[in-house]
Figure (tube, rainbow, N blue to C red):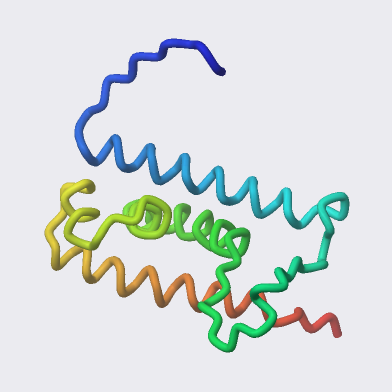
Length: 133
């Protein structure tokens, strides 16, 4: 809505960063879905000529798979899911995310370790085709 003035009352840093992380997640997921549509090229990947000789590539992130796994984690433990959103989508450090959530650094560290492992397992399980025998 361009041109509308919306005054938002933030309940604190945690509320602001939580909203920002959720907005960024939605933007990235919508963009990933748009790119996967057949009209936008479907399964074809665009390769820039300047990237053809690149020998080192960073890790590829499947935003849709992360979003799906994050939705499952949200049902199981909303605090851990919010921590992942703050770290992954808002780019907060672990101490910043802990402060935003109002939890100790050690709790955030434990939650982060659990969430990373849980998400990794969920995402690797989704890569394995189901046995339909």
